[in-house]
Length: 247
Image (cartoon, rainbow, N blue to C red; front, side, top):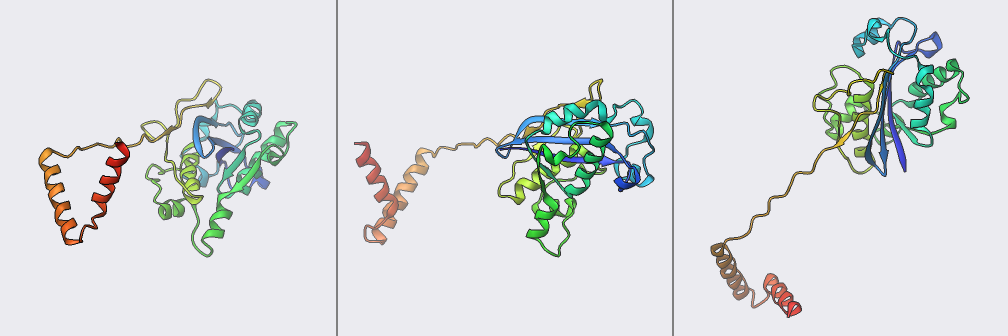
C-alpha cells in the first residue's frame, strides 16, 4: 500500500476568493514505512499573501517571486501522488486548493480524487475523540509526537509531523526526520526538492554477560528456591529440559 502524507500552505483561507497555493509538501509511505521519497515545492501564486498567512508561514511575497508556478510542476506533482492514498489533515481544504490549481493549469485532471484516494485525519480524529480538540498540535500532544520545531507552519515539516500522528493514531508510530536542522533540503533550480526522510535509527541494545561470581550466586539462589518449594523451581525445570534437548 502506497500512501502520501500531504500538506499545503496558501495565500489565504478561501479558495473561492481566488487564494492560491504557495507551498506543497509530501512524504511517501509504503506499507506504513517511509520510503525516503518526498515532494516539496514553493510556488509563485501571482497574487499577494494575506497578512494572516504571512504570519503563520513566515513566507513573504518577495521570496516567491522567482519560484515556479503550479502549472510548471503540475505533471511532476501528479506523477508523485498518482494512485496513492493521500493523507491530509482537514483534507477538504488541501484538496479544494489543489483542484482549483489543476483547473487553472488546464491539466487533463481537474479533480485530484480522480487519481488518488483521500483520507482525512481530522475526520478520523473526530471519530476517535468526539467533542475534543483535534488540531494537529492537539493530536501531537495527545500522542506525544514532538512538534517543537513547528514554530511556523511549513508544508513539508507539517507533513512529517502528520505522518507521525497518523501512524500513532492507526496502530504504530514510526518517527520521521527531515535533515538535522528539521527543515527541508535546498531546492533545485526548478523550485522543488525530493530530499530524504530518514527513519530514526534504533537504539542498539547492549548485552551484558553475567560474571562467574554472579552465575554462582544465581545457582545458589535457585537451590534455595527449589528447597523451599519442594523441588518446584520453574527455572531449574526449564534448565534441565534445555540440557536434555541439547543432549
